Image (cartoon, rainbow, N blue to C red; front, side):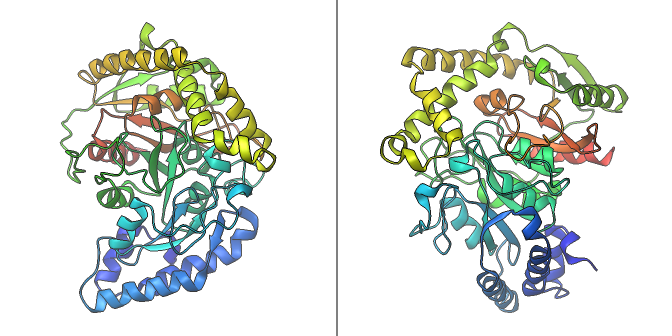
Length: 434
């Protein structure tokens, strides 16, 4: 049995039955990492003995019959998320050797549920666009995307069954698309950002990578949880593992205002998918309210970058990557007027989108402009994700398409706010038909 190909849910069931130990499961991944890490470069910190020590503690909890929901399951953490027993360097020379004194809120939830925090996955500098060392496991000449490059690549290469990333533009969905895995960005404000390096308080979303919807749902049941330290969270929100989807499902196919930025092979592939699918799909236009959607997201994000990273620009400019400097400088010129106008236009888009969800259960739209660029310095374009991120809706990338070089291209599925369980169940239906 190839343990690294077993889903997290199935591995958990085997541990419950005493057919597998966490130590065996974790060790199988460590052996695979030993063979592949020099090529893929998904990890910035990995201590095998620390991982195995956690696995042994999990096995002890199985014997004592005190397991957590994720007991013994290994998970990778993007290196902008604080871990008390591992460095968190935010992909930057400025934070080289940085050692947080406590876990980020979501890491604490994972530990409390019995997860094995396997190590820290490579991120672009401060989760922007300066690439790290990671390569795409599907083709080592291609980018894995950014900024959650290591998290997506590690899951794609079966170095880990689960990983945490984050998205401010398209940093969960795009790497998922490029590397052929599932990547969920839940509703804004459903996972705490406490202990996570910020880019934009209005846009930052932690997210989850896995190779199955059931695995994502398992992690979501733990970390989609209220934290009073994150002021953008809703104290009334509760993640429900059981959804309320009704049959027959109705889908809207949205090309969106940035359709022209897509590669021809992607556009042909997704149009063919929509034409050939047995799903009930109607092509719709988003309308005039969305004409400036991508620009509004860009203004909000750039303005936020200049605030969140401005101090590093003033005090440690020489240690920042040129790509990071360009992003900060693009934000310095954003005026308060244009920032507020972008937010107000976003509110109109949100209202228009809510009306679409009165008629449709989910939206089908591209997850990326095309397959992964054959350029390790280019993490790809987030233009098909950014305005959905701005609107805060839950979205997932499903590996349904192939590009001109037979490389994966994801399809982005979106539901209404706070319907993560429905999104995952709908995704499972879609995947079962492929």
